[in-house]
Image 1: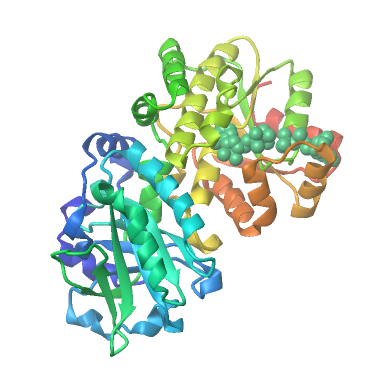
Image 2: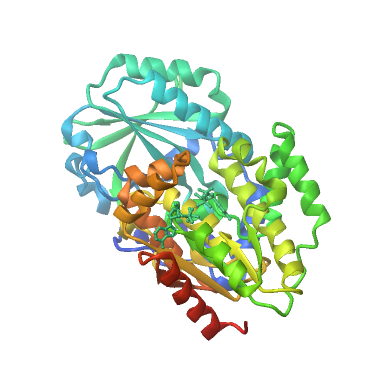
Length: 459
Ligand SMILES: Nc1ncnc2c1ncn2[C@@H]1O[C@H](COP(=O)(O)OP(=O)(O)O)[C@@H](O)[C@H]1O
Ligand SMILES: Nc1ccn([C@@H]2O[C@H](COP(=O)(O)OP(=O)(O)O)[C@@H](O)[C@H]2O)c(=O)n1
């Protein structure tokens, strides 16, 4: 298990390339890890940056279609690395990193988002702003930090000046380093703070670390694998978001441990405009079923509030929605079959696709812990994933004439994101989706779905 490993042992594995292998044993499942993180999250600020492993999000336009990773030089073996392995510095310019060191997850997430917005405003348009994650190899689960990696192709003195100015008021909860090329093409990482006691360190690129910082970020903060972890975040943000308290009250009123009744529970999943609403309404009529949606009606009025929050908070809302929805599902399934329009698969698949940068191969491998169903969430009997071609989906979206959500716009503009959402849907396990091609006319899709339901469920 990783936590007990020596840093030296881990570092030798860091330089090995290839996909990360899930290190967290299934038995000590994610839920436990997550609640531990939320309660023991520590501040790893100041001088520890010299020992961190950093992950920079992919940027095809800058010549690295996959994320890249680096760490301070710890052994002579790594010394052969040179500037050309840093795709952006190979073009000249400077890179900078900003790390958020706030020890409280909610305020750290809000600071991260606020800084991201401010950086996008104040930095010259030529600068590239990428996501950055880092952790200490000896304790990845308690040291994960989010931040930004900035590439300034023109090495403007004003960029550093603006950054210093911006970070001044967040000095306590952030750190900043510059990355420059040395005379032999080597890369030096230097803290930006004036008067810093720490000198420059030489940094080198390494292979994908294990665990992958991106997968770890999903396990620890982007997807909730237990009700308690979602509750903790909602409690933490209730002081600034009153609606969080209302959701906690609703959760208190639910018996989230209720088992489902004797009738089958069938979830319909798919990207926007694949025909979920159309199909779920027809299924309700055909099967004399109860139709429920996630997030449930009782909290949907607060959806906009949470959609505008950083993903840590937004996803806690959707996670809570699934648990509240589970109570409704359990109750309804005592009297009739239940059809559910979106559930856990949506919550996890969109979060995974958003948090994993790069192309489809960057998604953690099938069977990874990020694709596991939360142990304490009611499991449906069947999950059906509707798929249609991009072209058909766009036609349907336009035909529907509804306002596009932010994510719909993202889907429209970003094919890779769509492919990742769909692939994440397919990789989620226990239960896994049954895929139905939803391109044919509505009646045919209904017929095909009824066939699948009758084969797999007692209706
Ligand atoms: N099988 C189908 N063939 C053609 N159009 C469809 C089909 N299913 C749904 N539609 C249309 O596509 C649009 C989006 O469907 P909808 O059920 O609202 O999707 P979702 O709930 O997945 O966002 C609607 O205008 C609907 O009438
Ligand atoms: N159970 C759910 C339902 C929706 N969601 C989120 O809500 C978004 C889809 O909502 P939507 O209103 O566009 O869905 P439909 O209009 O297609 O039903 C997804 O992008 C998810 O981020 C979720 O996370 N969990």
